[in-house]
Image (cartoon, rainbow, N blue to C red; front, side):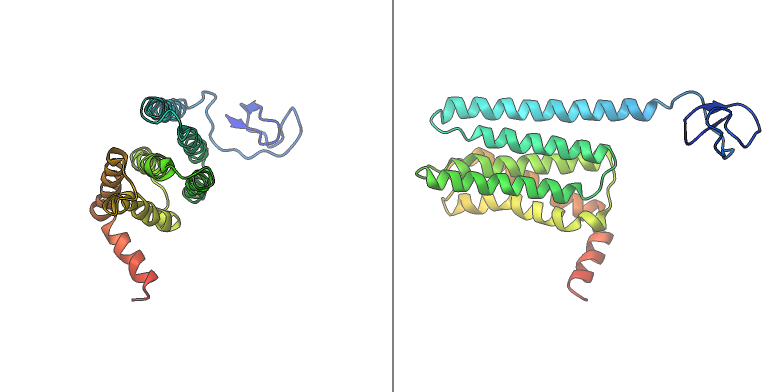
Length: 217
């Protein structure tokens, strides 16, 4: 049984002409039953990621309401997480350069938050909450992506390195007392270390090769 590429009808005959649209058909084995296993898996992963995004968003809003009710920083976190989910959906649909897009969106959210914080009197919510939260969300995204899908290391390596560096920056800012809220900075650093270990233990050969190419060794 074959499927006509033009009209999509299933044909159970050895003929080379589609009886419906009269176009030429290629006889390749096709099944009249859809393969649903992969679809079910994708739907489950999408629901799982959406659930994680919603949970983190709700936690961010609650922290914002309980600890810093005067500053609406949680809106940036929710915006960043929403962009993370949209990019993840792009990955599930087979699109390319998603890590570049995600990193760019998260980076823009962080910069916008810092600018807004600065021009409204700078109370530190952008670096204390938005910055590490964006780093954490991107770090979680990379770990989930590594579990459910295998992406092109060569295309994505720069953004993986940048993310590891970005996740460790809040710890550095905490040391210099630019960041004063410790929990999120420490969690961000933990995810940065986890992603660094993933690179070392699971991608050492390609990591070494990639670094040698970048350093022209």
